[in-house]
Length: 635
Image (cartoon, rainbow, N blue to C red; front, side):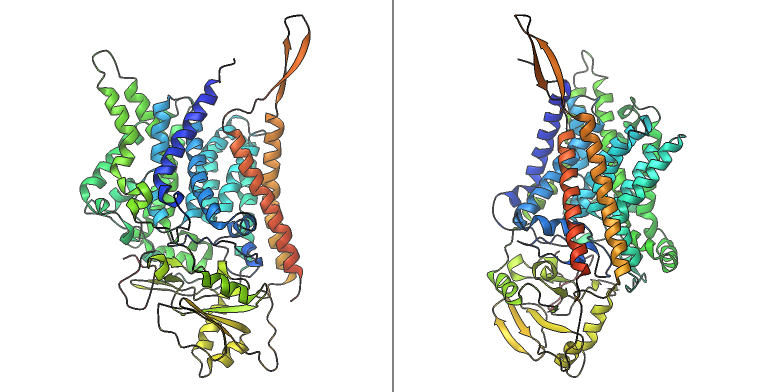
């Protein structure tokens, strides 16, 4: 019997270790029905298809095209399964990726790298504010590191890996796509012009899927007043801001922090782990000459960007620049861009564990305990990440009324307004009063409008969508029902148990404990409102072309990988001198998983582009201490 290769054994260990950590973190979600609904983490049983999921509504593409992919998948797979698959699968693939990046190290060193990548304050904080898509984009970065190595070694053949990794990151979120492109550039560029060409083409084309909708959303009004200061990184303890960031913490929403992170001792101890990982960085990548300098520059750059709005005068400078270059608004939550530093430190952890192991001699066996400490230190320093944030994250299920209202709305209800008009986050009784982005736009069909302002402790991030401002004026009018009719609103959904609501006049179609549905009588003469705001056929063509280009890049990279890694045939001589052909696959390591994921994403992206293009062408978190308002404040 043929023994498995060393690479196969290493991959099996990496998968098992990553899966084990994922089970420890997501165990409560996996043990029963329901969803985790908090912050920006919103999944629904079946997300109806809308052109908006491809950015064809003229709004900023914050979840484009991820919403399109989730919508397509939930047509055949329940949303609760999709949520579990994305979270657990993302953890496993991220861990396997960093394991591949440290493949030349022993199992314990890879375990140290995987643990630090998956178990750190940045992961905890992004998970607790529900930014699952950004978390998945972060977990794609180890694969970008691998792609950059391949690009440096062979620019003309390394483009395929880069295309897959960067496009997957860009699909997750715009900020993830930008980070992936930067990581590829910092680690992959050489004096060979081919590396510059590949990096530029891949970086741009992979991000067209959200970049084109963002550039063409000219009706959106993005305010930068106070947003950089409001979302700036903050010190978690008396150890200061730099210590928080160096230990991969420092998020602006301090209310989600575990008690231990508010003490200086634990933050300083976490900084010691950062120092150890930084010291091991050169040993970690010894087989890749010069890479440690690139990684060090990448980590320092990430730290500077994360700290920029928090330094004196930094927020004001960024606001001034963003008023001239709106694209800089992407940096308003700069703490998320600390993600590359976490990847750098994960690599360094493997080097630190290896360096300590190399010092083990007879009589110095106690150093093995130091190796073990490096492996488990991330979990010891942040036990609150275990078991759904130490049991804080509870599962919830949508009341049956939500399905009843969705059925009453039908497949194409037109424009729907959701009340109360009090910010974009809600605190439902059935969801343990945790602040969560209103699920209505993803649960209900039609053009569902909610108040998309973000309410902070020290201010309000204004609405970006002109349609929202139009509805606000209608609700404030002397006759809200007539004003809503004039704005093309057909239905009003009232979510109960929160702020008091002054209902517009209309026919009550549903009245329950959780929801009410009111039909607004048609205007006379009727008001014609398209499926989404009129963005013009030329803009639709540009957006669909951008999605298609990203999908083609992803599928082309996958096709090239398939051709390179296809099974080979081995000629074996039998005992009687007869020759028989025995097919032996060369499909070892994690390539299969990477390829399968990229192929699925590419196929779904292509399907989303087709569906969106056809439809567009047709005419037509935690509760805050306030009695009636749920916000996404930092406290």
